[in-house]
Amino acid sequence: MRELALHILDIIQNSLRAGAKLIEVEIVEDTRLDTLMVLIRDDGSGMDEVLLERVIDPFTTTRTTRKVGLGIPLMKMAAESAAGDFTIDSRLGEGTVVKATFVHSHIDRMPLGNMADTISTVIAGNPTVDLVYRHRINDDVSGLDTRLLKAEVGEEALTVPSVIEWVKIYLKEGSSYLMEV
Amino acid sequence: MKSLDELRQLREKAQETIRLREQAGGIRIIVGMGTCGIAAGAREVMLAIVDELQKKNLDDVIVTQTGCAGLCEKEPLVEVLRPGEPKITYGYMTADKARAMITSHVVNGQIIGEYVVAKEDDVAE
Ligand SMILES: Nc1ncnc2c1ncn2[C@@H]1O[C@H](COP(=O)(O)OP(=O)(O)OP(=O)(O)O)[C@@H](O)[C@H]1O
Ligand SMILES: [Mg+2]
Image (cartoon, rainbow over all chains, first blue to last red; front, side):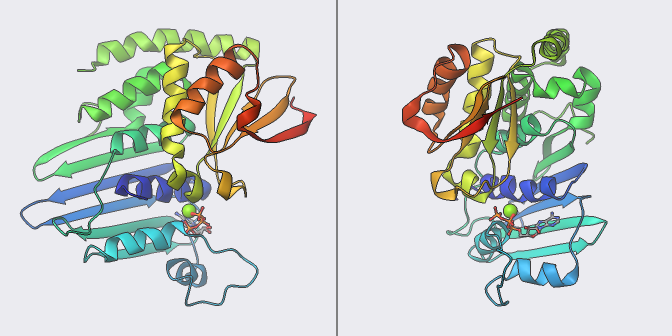
């Protein structure tokens, strides 16, 4: 994958598969501290310690019957190759927080890529889930809270292509009037 | 700039679309969105489908997503379900192929055989 936004889409798919009802995606870019932080929090089924350990580092554990996925290890690699850090905090029955940090100016840091496409893809396919997306660059914040969007158009409208097109452009424009700042 | 007014205008139209869907039992399109699908370009395929549906005023078609379908090497995968017809799975999709698929299969009912990687035997409900 060539964009962090694609890794983020992939990590969100895990949250969706875990039955999350609310997913929060936060990106914080601080050019003064030279950091980029990505956080994905969900209220899905969570993982116990045994699974969590296997998931983060599938190659050091004995793989037997169960196929271990690639989504999480790939994101971990992306962070580590930009002198960053990758952590997952998860509790069974409560939810999961995936956090990746990067040195913003690191030569091997993947570009953030197209977050408008990532977020509108998630919204289009999953109208019943609530998504809070926040992107901060130094002192500027943009984003979207689908609960505010649903208050305007209703939940089912999120399956209507013309509404998704509207959302995609709203996000591309870096707006913030459909979120709580 | 997109405005809230514009969004509120879409609301009316969207509600009408949803009413129509309930009567018609419309076409469903499902895009594979597992790691392998995403790495192969599923996001662009998904958004090309949404864009093409909007341009062609096909708001009654429902697009959803699914995880890994076990055909990783053929991703991006797109399934098309037309009421009363077998499920068709297209593979190695791109944004352009997806747009062609909308015109041919969704609008005109013509399957693009060249892109098909699987076909269900039983009839979708
Ligand atoms: N947010 C989450 N909540 C609960 N379980 C999770 C979450 N994220 C990951 N998991 C568990 O960790 C496993 C590994 O995730 P990972 O993304 O690495 O691979 P995968 O999703 O199984 O397959 P893929 O290669 O398609 O991503 C998942 O199958 C799931 O059991
Ligand atoms: Mg995954």
